[in-house]
Length: 326
Image (tube, rainbow, N blue to C red):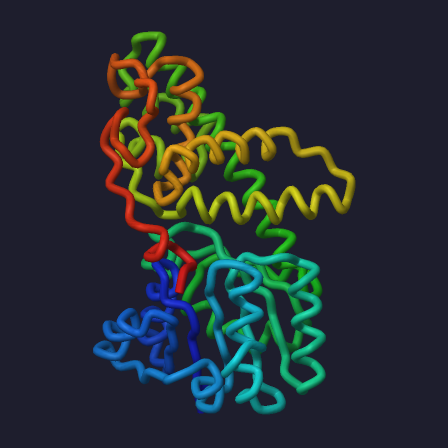
């Protein structure tokens, strides 16, 4: 008999992941802080729950995909938290990106209730969530991982057991270090290409087939050229992840200069109202420094571009609708 799944957190990523669980044939119950976001899943065949604890009473496996460490703590152990309804031998799969050390603490609290936990943060953006091709990095016991594998395969394509509980979050932060480094390089390269007077589309096509190719360049480079800053992952959420990266790096005495630079670039954009834009909007910080606008000749105005559109073309969604938000 297939295990019953509960899903908490129906942001851009979560609702697509939950829909793929339905498509895989799982009996699914959902809960979301903004109740209206449950309606499309209910129409597609899911049940809804009135609270996390009510949801937990009707599932064997609980998947969580919310924004930050306090959000995971709240849905598990807050008022009406899911932990109060989970039976012994239930399994919690946390697909949020949160603190590795706090993950281990939450896992210990669940073990006291004889509940298993895996940390399984995801990468691949909204595109990967919709297509069911996410990369999922999993921390926890081998037994729990094997049990979770059919569920994870319904949501992702590259699924890797990377170690004990908390290791999944550490590897996700490795992923984010690489993402922001690539984003900065892409931004600088496109500003450089613009300054050099070459055709941006042809330049992108030329380098995408060689050693410089990357997921970010392929998926976000064309959006930058088109001034399309709709989010697959917002600046605000990228900043949350960078705070986790920099805090962990500080604890381990590891210097991360590129991540620090990215954090401050994104902070400038947040101050200008651009926190709800996609993280590829980091190009706007490079534009502000250089006075060169990708995709046009106009120089940045004194108020910048984020949110106001002074440098053009953002159609970002609000933070409340973003990737891991409830």
